[in-house]
Amino acid sequence: MTDRPLNVAVIGCGFIGKVHASAYLNVPLHYDPVPVRTRLFAVCTAHQETARRAKERFGFELATTDWREAIAHPDVDLVSICTPNAAHQEQLLCAIEHGKHIYCDKPLAASADQARRVIGALDGYSGTHQMVFHLRFFPATIKARELVDAGFLGQVLTFRAAYLHAGSVDPQAPFRWRFSKGAAGGGALYDLGSHVIDILCHLVGDFAELTASTHIAFTDRPSPDDPSIRVPVDADDAAFLLVRTASGALGSIEATRLATGAQDELRFEIHGTAGALRFNLMDPNWLDVYDRSQVDPGWRRLPTALSYPGSGGFLPAKASIGWARAHVACLHNFLCAVARGGAAQPGLEVGADVQEIMDAAYRSAEGRRWVAL
Image (cartoon, rainbow, N blue to C red; front, top):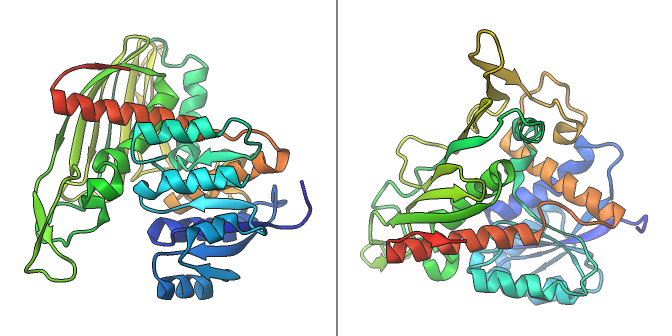
């Protein structure tokens, strides 16, 4: 690994692109020493003015509206993919072709077919790649995985998980790309469900079969340019899945933007023969556990904030964890893999597995049937 900073290209600098840029700037503030130094070198957005503003705000050296120029630039070492889902496949293939390290926001692509093409292109690729499934990097979810690996749950029997947002509740909210299946690939299932599916597979194992239903609350929305014009909506506002794991456990998954009053509420419960776990992203400093082996069993709250060195860096144990800091921890995990020249987890293959599950859910919803995985 070179001693010079690795030059980063951020492709797409909307909300999540700004989160990525902020994480790169914050890794050295949280971790000492840093696994590898990075420099925000190139930023690409759809419009020259937003590219210029991003350059000024974050200190990029190059601003462009041509993502190929940014990815293929000979000085770029590492690419963050932060664009709408439909653009991911081409940009990932370009980054693989040019041998760049890849940090890709979810979902991997806009379909399982696209995801398979991306994974197929990795043959001969020598860079490091990682999906931004940052929910794995909260101290509470790290602790949950440790307990699962230690056999705390026993045999997993049932589970339930939900990711609740309220972004689609207002029927007069203007149309945006997330309401278009062409731009997003899918709707709430892709946007929110990808996180739920990943964290559940991470904790309870592979899914074997599922049945699903999706829902669009409002079939058209006002145009952002002219509210008198209604634009058709074809991306789901909510998705509900019933899934069975390879070990036989049965569980439910809900991904919705129709949860009035919700903010950013991901929650899960896992019930086994020996114990149970539950977590809520709105209260992220704690993991609730139930241990049947206790003489007087009952739910206990384990304080997990910054119990793990990788989750918070220099911050003291009394400091509460936060959503943005989980992104910093996720990026730090990736940069550690880049520094050692090895594979990162979760890699793009995990993103492809999640994509297969989501596409199976859409097939199930369309055919109103169980689908094997």
